[in-house]
Length: 140
Image (tube, rainbow, N blue to C red; front, side, top):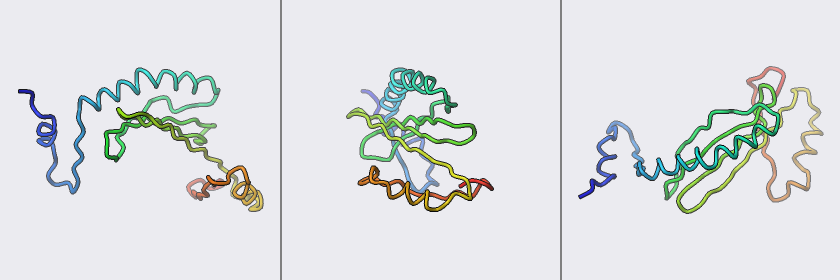
């Protein structure tokens, strides 16, 4: 009789933690192989064609959901700053591509320019969010 993967994975649990998440290791490995061998080469070739620096090492993480989902993250950089972050989520049911774009502005940018961006009618239904990151002295 084949050993139940749940029991095998449960034996690895750190009982000091307050939460336990069990993943079928065979399914996780299958999804990771799909992400790395089927999807990543296509994504990488597209990243290279942009001419921008990109975050070259794919990072795979699990998503909290009712089904096992694995996510592959990648980024485009303009010099030091990330301006695009992509995420491909994959499960046995299907896949979903998510993207975020970032616009870094100098600290002394006229607030009217920011308001024009935020109120642009092309964003209707899916407006951008404004985040202020004060880590860089001259940029937000």
